[in-house]
Image (cartoon, rainbow, N blue to C red; front, side, top):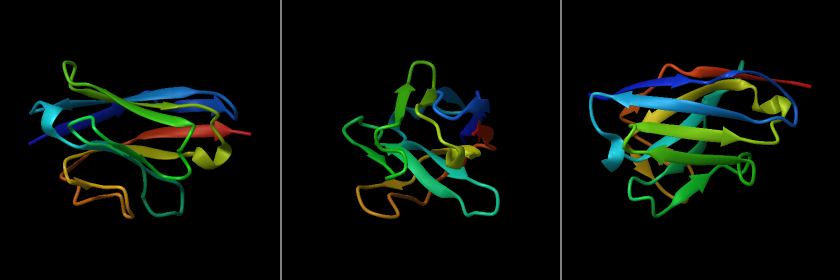
Amino acid sequence: QVQLVESGGGLVQAGGSLKISCVASGRNISRYNMGWFRQAPGKEREFVVGGLWSGFNTYYADSAKGRFTISRDNAKNTVYLQMNSLKPEDTAVYYCAAGGLLGPNPPYYSHVNYWGKGTLVTVSS
């Protein structure tokens, strides 16, 4: 079992930056695909970004390309999401995901094995 705990969410102005974290426990995540999803109010959860465990490839939703960056520190069992040039439409609960299948085509990331409980990011205009 892997437990995921997100942190770092908060209120930020449009155009600003925020870095959120996901700390894993229970198992080392070095062999897990890892990623981030988000769910805005009244909308379905959507894929944001995912990285293969090997580090060989990373896949981004169009909405995240050029603005968001995923990184991981396997020694700290932590995954990060750096978000720049934030927009009000980025307002959502951001969820960390571990395991599952990750690829270059929609739905990009499926059969996620573990989910965190999320951290709220609010971008004001």
